[in-house]
Every structure is written in C-alpha cells, then in structure tokens.
Image (cartoon, rainbow, N blue to C red; front, side):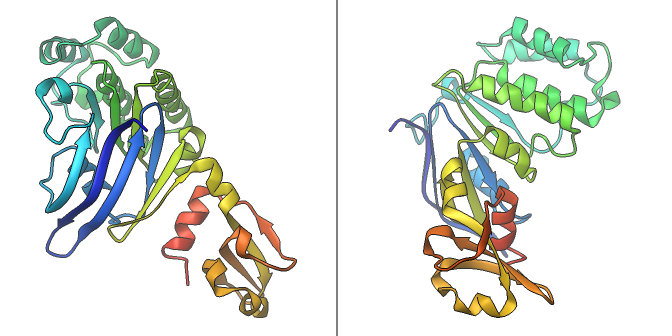
Length: 279
C-alpha cells in the first residue's frame, strides 16, 4: 500500500475541544471525502495534517516524511475557507506572483482554466462573485503540479453548475495515479459523485473510514412500526428516529433478521443518524 499521507493517533487539544487519536490515511490515486457536523473536528484535522497546527501527540507523514522540504510542500495544493488573495489584485497580478513562487508553475494550464472558468483577467478580486473566487482557488491550487490536493469546503455556497465543473477537475486530477485528494464538504451529494472513500469524524474522533461503495452494502435505512424496533437486535441499530406512527433506523444490514423494508442510505443519512438525529 502506497499512502500519500498518514495520520497516526494524532491528538490536538484546545480549551474546550480537541481531536483524539485520529488515524487517517489515503492511498495514491484516490479521492477521500471527509464529513462531520460543524465543530466535529474536520478543519482541525486538516490543519494538523498540513502542519498549520502543532499536534500534541501522534505522527503525521506526507509523502512518507514527517518533516517536509520546500520541494515537498510545493507538491501540495490547498484550498481553505475564503479567498487568500488581496482584493485589489487581478488575475494578471496573480500570474506574475505565482510564477515566481512556484518552480513548477504551469502558466498554460492556469490560463486555460481561467478561460474555461470565464474568470476575467483584468477584474479585481473584490469584484469577483463567490463562484469566481472558488474557481480561482481551485485553479491556483492545481497549477503548480501538486500530487496531493487538500480542500476544505471548496464548493460551499456554489451553484450546481460550478460545483460540477470543480468535481470534474478533481476526477481528472486523479487520473494520474500518483495524485490524491482529501476533500471536506457538507454537500455530501458532491462527495457521492467523486469519492472513493468516506471518512466520518464526530466530536473529534474518527467514527469510520470506509470504501464508499461498501458503505451502501454495509448500512441500510430500516422502516418499521414503533413497537417493532424493540424486536431488532440492539447491536444492529446505530441510531433511529420516530414519529407518531413509524420508526426509521440506520442499521448494519447484515445484522437484521426478519422481514423489514430497508433502503440504501445516502452519505447524508448516515451522518445524520450518527449525529443529531440519532437516539
């Protein structure tokens, strides 16, 4: 197994929150979706991975190294919340700056992406729409020939057309089997379209890391009458919700005996039953 990054038993504590014993790794050539409620620890985990936060314990390796050289750091493309560029800059300005920053800057690729994304060259960033800023972030993240993309909510607030454009870029990016993507998003339908693996964090701890296709086989949404939930093996039930007439439960599909109506869950279903809607 050739992992592009590994986090082993990583802990980071703050006054009222922390991540605990995070174990997370990703093979080359794959896309991992990172899900969890607000405040669950996604951004903290990502910042620890990138070295933006000093960890309390554990180890983080990228490209097999705990300490990265500048040449290694250039092989990481990052999109965090917001636009990192000064609002008075234009695309012309950014091209000049990034050409000097990155030894492997691909100007032709950047100009083509800006053209395809309809990003105006002479307009100041302060005049950009949210969608334009998001597309600019993606373009600058992938045009210095990285091998790892780390994206924290890159499609938040964007319309479906723009989100699809960005997802297509990610799929194209991992056609090179040396490249991988870690993407955090609340838009779980986007993750379902492109991800090979899903990692779920809750209250600072990793709940599971699963192959996306296997998730649909492992879990099910069970529908039953309220009194029937008590007839099901408790070890099969992850969480459930009830109304006056019926019960819905997230279950381990292979642990349920009896004749019940069961549907395949979405990634969003799984997250909700594990968090605020679970009983």
